Length: 155
Image 1 (cartoon, rainbow, N blue to C red):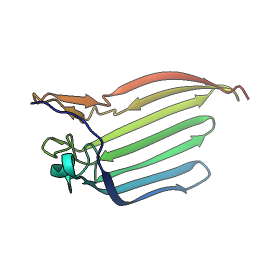
Image 2: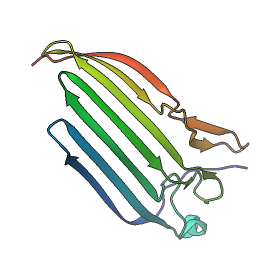
Image 3: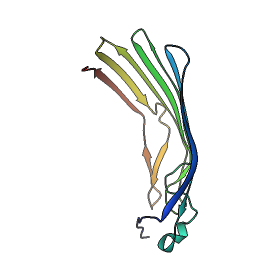
Image 4: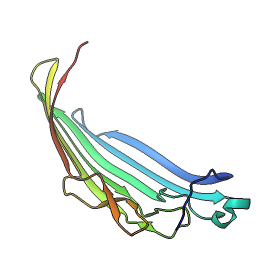
């Protein structure tokens, strides 16, 4: 099957998005975010068969909740992220599953300018689908990633 990507007439997108940070104390901050997107293709002529369908790889729901803290030179954060189901293709035939991932970070200030960090993204190695090939092979995104880093502030 031959596939070709072309520009569309337009996409009409309606939705709501919010992002909030709440200071629970001087040391702890709660972060929340959510997006609802109802996007639809407006197509004519060549793209008429796509008219009214959702654009490829645009989830209807996405959100996150997390917390960060800082106490006596220690820094930490934890975040849960959700991305809803979405179509992999413009014809809305192949569907990518939803995913829930967890991230965590810990850090310590060695001095006013030097900090060491340990981070982990998608620490439970949840399956995050990025694409589906024409033969049905599913490409994964965002596998578990761990790293150790050093930050230096030049100010």
